[in-house]
Image 1 (cartoon, rainbow, N blue to C red):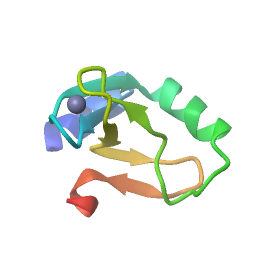
Image 2: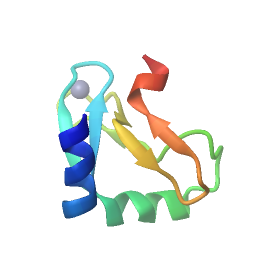
Image 3: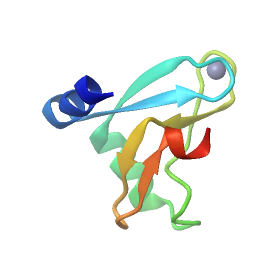
Image 4: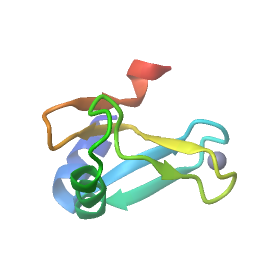
Length: 77
Ligand SMILES: [Zn+2]
C-alpha cells in the first residue's frame, strides 16, 4: 500500500482492482481525471472502468476525485 502511494505520486497512475477476479490494472491519472470530469453522476461513486478479463467493474485502490472525494478499495470490502 505505501509503496503504491509513492508510485502514484511519482508516475501518476491509479491502480484499479477488479472486484470479481482481482485483476489489477494501472490507469494513468490523466485518464481517470478525464472520466471524472465527464461524469456528472453520483460523486460518491468513482470513475468506473470495466475489467478487461471478465468485464466486471473495477474499483480504485486509492483515488482522490476532482470533487474532493476519496475512494478507497478498503472502504467497500
Ligand atoms: Zn475481472
